[in-house]
Image: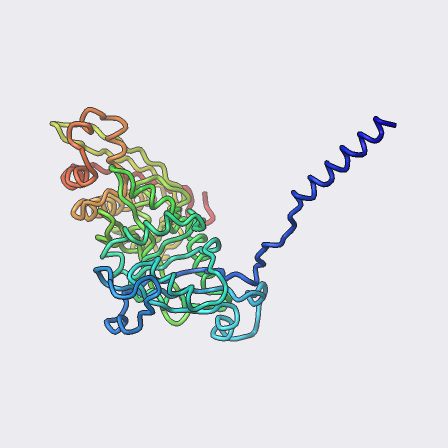
Length: 404
């Protein structure tokens, strides 16, 4: 009897203790009670913004520097569509997202002003796209990166884009293919990566490149065409945390070729002597980068091996099916490819922006040179601007239309 009573007492104590662990959901916060920020646009604030400032984080003292204007796209609970609709793009955008604009002295200051104007607590866990204007990027991204890095809610797989027009206009684009502007931007960039039109460059990858002494970061450079189309204009490359230059669209392909990034997705229009205009599409890239120290200075040797196909011939009266004609097309492509890669290297060297990561190769394979000459990041930028670069390109055409 005593053993049975003891067991009953112990069981009762165990159940009582378990009840203390079953706290339930008394402090739960449903998704409909959260302000889920899907995207942000960062622009320079107009001069009259000083009068519009809400002074949420300060009263009299103001930080130095220009003010910024933040445009936030917040998901409306239960209104984000999952299927096609016959509604116009304006109605879709208005129903599915809430657009809120605020100004501030920094991103954190502006988001505090944003929180003061919305009832639900803001959450950045679903932030997928941040668009910044070119003017903001040229001023520098130190403050912006500092806040995003410190915020644990911000994913490293968020995309950071540079726009040649006010960033707020980019968030307003809502084509028929997608009813939420943010999801359209996200889908466009990620599909560009899968199709070989742009290298994978999440926010976390950009931060990693910028933190290395032997490499600089780059971001997608975008614009708007028409009412509902986004154009990937090129690479926006940085030096010292500031935007210093941009490329043209085809130079994205030149960069990816120099880095050996697959898949190949760009086509080149060539004027081949005796054959007329021919379109050649790159499909595979294989690159070998070698850096030697010659006469006390790094020298880069870049060997690019490409595979592709002829996708179009303008003058159908000319036969290009012979090995001689194909070889002529390959040689012309090699010449133009060398010019494109060298031109991109030259432009980045003038701006002291090593987006190719040549400095990291020097640091890994020539440690004595690195320790002697590089004591901070700008030292490598100065060295990179004067190193010679030898480029060789060899294209192998595997297909001529349906022929192999």
